[in-house]
Image (cartoon, rainbow, N blue to C red):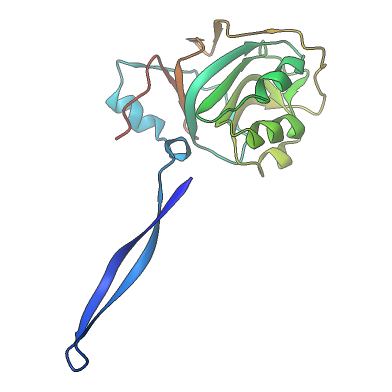
Length: 196
């Protein structure tokens, strides 16, 4: 995840002992693109013709306030059984976009499900629906955006479908699109944005 290098802090010459001394300062730098911080406002300014902006319906609930990646879509209403199957997959570089029909009656994501996602390295979850156990969600190293929190949990029968077109927040999401999120909002692009 991180690489270790060193940079020269300063050097001196000890002419009496015919020695050259150098002090190196170790540096850690981010080589993992998936842990980058995203500024959706700046990305909108640069790529205004290439991105769609999701309506401001969502709040942050996860431990990471900025996340992004290639999306996988799922549609399920007040039932999170299918989410367990999907979040068992390797999520590195991926964001799960969940169309829960905007339900605020049952939470689709709880601490157990979010912990599974974080363990399998998902970058984030965007839930057009509700979450619960928000204090625990805030402790997890994953981005989570949802429209509300409620104590009642969802059923676990596995009813729903994945890799389907979903539409909410004024935007249509397809698996394979790229999503970027921060405290300001969520944007969507058909292709990955050049962040260099």
